[in-house]
Length: 209
Image (tube, rainbow, N blue to C red):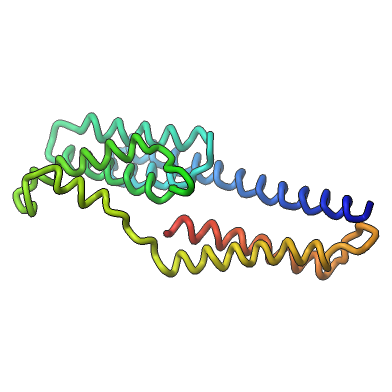
């Protein structure tokens, strides 16, 4: 029975932490989305694009702010303003879509269709630049398709975060809960802090990879 109680406590702890992280992601994503809307309404489109990209990077499966951010970026990219600034805004929007899609890849690539469209559009635009290495869009698509290596520092932070997270959970089970299923205050507190710090490092590493 004590073992069952420990498992329930640990699962509840992990669920609470994951829930808190999910809430943080949604709150930050919606905040960035609102900031983008405000900036675009003020005519600061490039700054708005950066805010939309930030919203898209705060990725959580099924989170509505992510789809909305991509939709707004594609609207800017596919319907540029009919003036010299429109071209810069169009390219910036496609690059923001590409950056957000690549930054949030894990076992799958969220918004893979948007990423494909962005690569094709950027390649086409880049081929038309007078200083371009070649006017062949296929060459530019090939360059964009190359996998960019993630930052070594970000990978180290993410890896250490996972180890710290797992170590915190193991510490909570082994030392933070006694044989009766009660928390042992100091070990439980240390293990909890370690787990939270590990999850934060993991998320930070993935975000900056």
